[in-house]
Picture 1 (cartoon, rainbow, N blue to C red):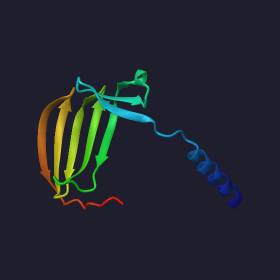
Picture 2: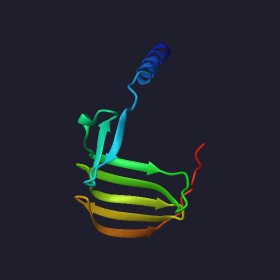
Picture 3: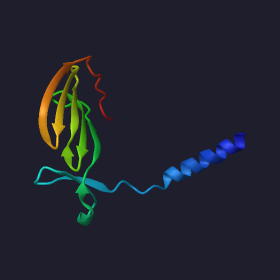
Picture 4: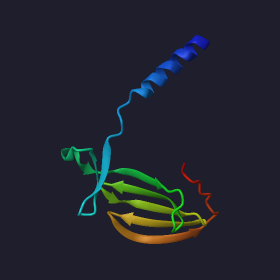
Length: 115
């Protein structure tokens, strides 16, 4: 049993170690659409669909974290902004257009400084 565990652990570590490096970049077009493409290969550019999260280690304005949802390069659904004083701002988007904004007071967020 122990031998099998170390065998699978070794395979897992080796499998994770030889992955291709992340070689994509984000580009916001003049049309306001967020694109993703492989670095130095503009022919691979396509509108981004999925979630995007940004975390900060303490900005002057207190912004700690942002979470976005994109569909075909345009903001879709709820965008959430978290601030260190506990304020959470939720913006609702449809096809890239802002529909509503809600501000919610919550518990303060502990900011962890980067290394």
